[in-house]
Every structure is written in structure tokens, then in C-alpha cells.
Length: 81
Image (cartoon, rainbow, N blue to C red; front, side, top):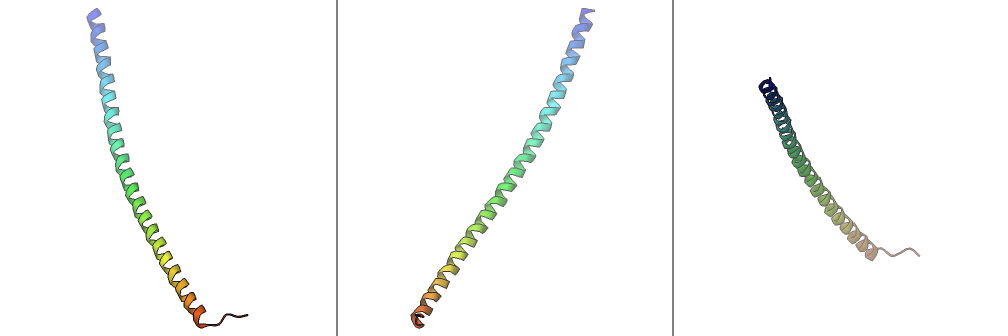
């Protein structure tokens, strides 16, 4: 009788360990998926930051050229009193 009880406890422990191993494997898969998704989002963000930086540089260049043209216009046109 006691042997049956011990065997039953071992069976219960074995089932719990198997269940925990499945959960662990599932969490590892989920972790890998999330890690890949995180890497993808970081790459997208980096691309957007670079695009924004390029837009800023382009805007600054355009602003500089406009200011230069306005200065030239002021030099050739008399200011209104």
C-alpha cells in the first residue's frame, strides 16, 4: 500500500515536471518571438529616426537657401520707406 502511494506521488511529480517543461518551452518560444519583434521595431525606429534627421537637414538647407535669396533680393531692391 505504501509503495503504491509512493509510486502515485512519483507519477504526480513526473506529470507536474512534464507540465512545467511544456510551459518553459512555450515561454522560450514566446520570448524568442518577442525578441525578434523587438529587434524589428528597433530597426523600424532607427529608419524613422534617420528619415527624420534627413528631413531636418533638408529643411535647414532649404531655409538657408531661402534666406540667402532674400538677402540677395534685399541687396538689389530698395527698401520701401
